[in-house]
Length: 387
Ligand code: ADP
Ligand code: MG
Image (cartoon, rainbow, N blue to C red):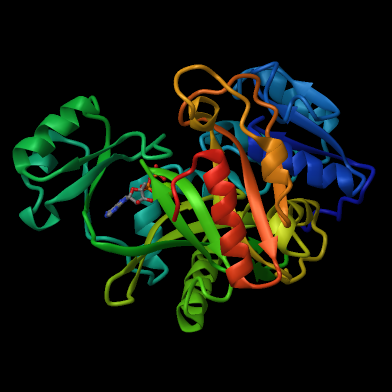
């Protein structure tokens, strides 16, 4: 049975009230939808801008019932929304992405098994769930990165280990929860690809992103013709499409990749939602990742986005509010906004903390040298290290 197309005027819901939910809400509202957010935090970035805000826990049956009553369809912005909540919602309303796809993305072991099934290579790895598996871990995986199978993000829940002794200590530090140990690879670069897949199986993609991480957190994304070789970009898109199709996915999916020194590609992880590395699409493409999320959820046609400007995105972490020392300051927005092609996005978070994602700045421009030069000026003004 195919669900009907949900047209503007209806209410779309989102599980999670963070910045990704906020930008989804903005995109939906621009197209004439009403919106509802479920997030326990009364000051959540998406809750603050949505028509309706259900302030309960993700598994609260009453909260889920209220959300369903309001909404014609529901999506998620937060990959750790408990899959059972999506199962409950999915029994009564169209939910995209579906609970089973989200459940795979929530578990690194299942995620890697899926990549392998789709014929996309990932880093050599082993699953560590028991002391026996710890003992029988092959030496070839060292030095490696021990990652909790669930709930890791922004480099949290992972430890780099060189020896078997360090591995054992690290697993204890991670409280012996199920983990994967991945071989530490020499990375030449990191990239990501965002695709949207419709109910009818149509897939469209944003151009692949080149990403720079610092301290495990995305710092800079570049998307322009000098960022990645065209053949590599094609292979990245093909692999991402295969991963989305293998899941029968509906919605926006981001897949992160490593590029090794010899140019080979290794898939890292996926996020069943729009992604930080796709924020540039709001200012540099004719269809943003959030509009794609709205279209896929509503069952509207997907169109292949066209990038009209080269872009560099700088993540604005809470550190910038403390860049001049320990006293909190307001970053010099006036100076930054004097730069041509600077697009400021702040998420309405009430307090800055180091490492907290407060907003992002996208720089667009007529050509790659101009975009990069302006982005470097913006970085210097903000106290972000050059790239
Ligand atoms: P998160 O969920 O925190 O984003 P990732 O698995 O993407 O976790 O790891 C965060 C970052 O750590 C990656 O973007 C990459 O820079 C580095 N990293 C992770 N795994 C490896 C690996 N196997 N080899 C080399 N670097 C890695
Ligand atoms: Mg990652």
